[in-house]
Image (cartoon, rainbow, N blue to C red; front, side):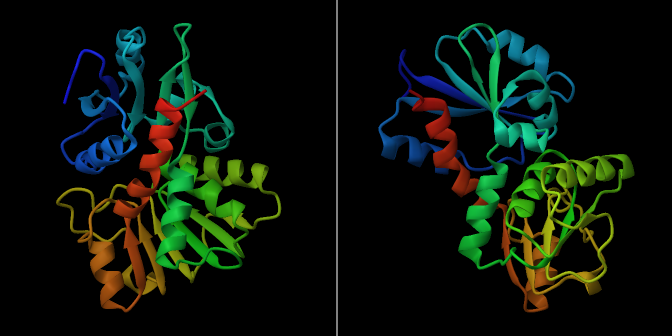
Length: 256
């Protein structure tokens, strides 16, 4: 029940119509006994800073969750914690009480929890990551922290891919990181392919290995369908989202 004391968590994205998780957030908020609402905010690309300037002084704003395409802008705007600084992207922002923002990134932690629950091995495995955007940067850092045998990062934007390769190499000098891997043991899709009606695979079907994770929050993406048809262990972004919910609520509502 919304009241005059209800705190707000806003989900900022563009587009926003595809987003999910509202029922899951509502259930978690109720279970924790918070008076809070999780609501969508359609913030056009490139306008995150304008949006934040308009809401930073809302006294009942707990924070903003950022999704595509705002994560790298969020890291630029907010004062980053270690996870956001490493990734160069942030998916959480909260007012700092002085007109500014604190930033965090829990995509990496959510991915690791989901991958572990699904039985996807990362340590000492050859991992191919597709997509070097905001989520891809966080997931790449999380994977590198697990000690893979090798990590390859692919993105159609070569500059963006090289930037992430360099960032991972700087943070984890002991991890072999490169643009091209050949055959992999684990495939992680952090691109937006599969999010809409696009029926393309994000990679050649022959390159799909025995373990697959698609961060897109749909069970029927072309990658998920192809991976399961090949007998792969496969999971998708719902589990990653679910793993992040308690982290989001704790960071925004339960700080000391």
